Image 1 (spheres, protein in one colour):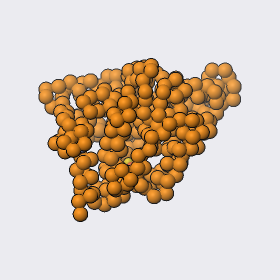
Image 2 (tube, rainbow, N blue to C red; image 1 turned 135 degrees about the vertical axis):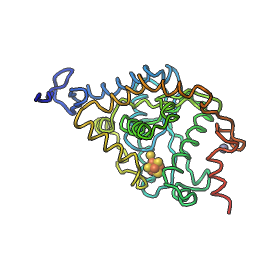
Image 3 (cartoon, rainbow, N blue to C red; image 1 turned 180 degrees about the horizontal axis):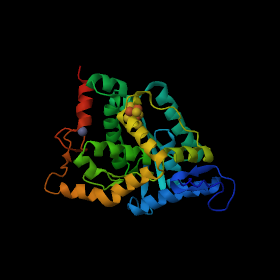
Image 4 (tube, rainbow, N blue to C red; image 1 turned 180 degrees about the vertical axis):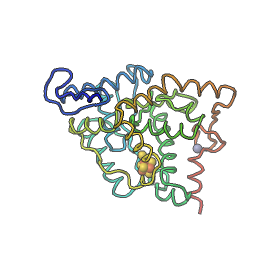
Length: 309
Ligand code: Q46
Ligand code: ZN
């Protein structure tokens, strides 16, 4: 049996280490870990042609570690990036999340766009979940997607960035694979091009794990919202994340190989299998003008349901 090699010194200049990354058989001191995070994001942006130099970016921020780390890193990489915070109305959790996003923007002198669901549309996530009889994440995800897209288009941004990390994306991929969701697999790219009434959307954190984004925030003094959303309990993705985490612990590098291997070697085959006309056709919502599969988009239908007595 071969013992796993455990580096004890920074891979770059042999200083004191602050973090070990078994998946890279590496360990880093503070400065080189921060550089490693920026390099991973820059590499992802380049490999998947996510943004161009000079693009104006809108970063969707929840107040949590991933999105604030992303906002910080793309700004450090030299991009002009504003933040977008959507108030979901999930009690104390939303209050603390909004404060974290505002604090980050104020401390770093960055512009934060704020849109509150209750103020703008007359309902919050809890009310929408109750009215639809579905899990809160369903109405929440639908509302966030709509607000993100509209804010990016209305603000004239070149791309909308979200803080999905490797753990998130590998779990979604795992779930889609277990059920052979061919259409979702074909579309599960870390960047989606702009379309008619749709902004370009990218996930530049897909090479970083949630442990790495948390460490990035701690080491750069980003005071993020540490609580998990209280409505996440029972979320199927959490179970898939746990399963992948066990596979990763047994064999470091599994999540990266699974996710990036899919992007490089397999996704295109699923896309080709849809090329016979099953590809997703979108039109314009008759109410709000957003891209939609139906005459009225899902968000406008939800709104109608929430405002009709
Ligand atoms: S905020 Fe919304 Fe998440 Fe809470 S209700 Fe679900 S989707 S868990 S990222
Ligand atoms: Zn609509």
